[in-house]
Length: 423
Image 1: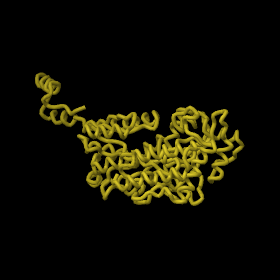
Image 2: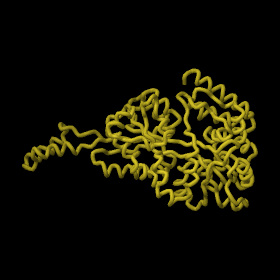
Image 3: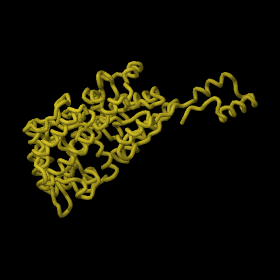
Image 4: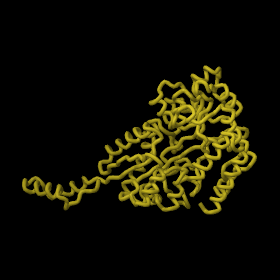
């Protein structure tokens, strides 16, 4: 909605009517001008319809408490980042977007598609000291902050209590050996039930590399590290779960994603984030489940976390209004409202002790994993590499068409080529 012009027929007609009736005074005219509303649009992806409903609820509260600004929520369906790239080219991107810690976000920053927020932060005296440093650093380049973290969630182990009891398993696994044993006990192909159901995308197996003492890339993201013995050990453990038929992908059990497979009772365990909790509560409320930290590997206990931020696009016609919304959403009060809706974990350290988490002890495993998590990200130019090539190579491995060592060598070579080409 555009701000009304004083020359528009509707406004002119209103003024004329007031003049004719003697009911409008010069003192009233500024009040009419102050009533103008800045309209901004917020777009993001949705992990489920539940998330869209919860975000709308939060934005409705903002609209009610900020009469000078009206925010429209326009979630993007389909390939979120591809659609955004098209809209940036067309010059009509939303005012505010979700900025992913991986994917095209680093490219958006490199292409100056997002505005640096430092001046807004200083002018409004907005403190960033309370944010997890790792989360904030993912959206900071050369001292310029391009996104304020909205939330995050680590990957933790969700387990089905009913299936565990039926398989005679008293406690969820805490080590790799127990994870493999439990996955085998839980698997019953005749009933389309598997011990672990997850995609074979890189985030689902990368955490096993870290727990074996390896890594995907070095800390500065300038060198691939996939061919070390430690990386191979972690990768082999993951793919062997599938090769031994104790793990499978969601499509095998007729599910669109791991969370659905878990809710359907077809998965004894899944590696997922906090976004699964409201989905289960609303879509599969009778599923009895627990959440525990990632089972410990031979070297350490680590997992991946996925911070998401709000960013203002270069196409925004109301960047100040957009900043007002971001400041509201990421303030302690705003983030507390979002956390109390149960969708994700906070990006602010001080909110880990919220009463909400004491009232919902099922989230304890996720909170514990947050303290031992590595923010997941890739440098510019590696979207197709991470989302397609790495998945395709791993699919060949679990199908027995390629060795784990050969797959990692292929991924190492392809990744190095991208890095050497400068993305």
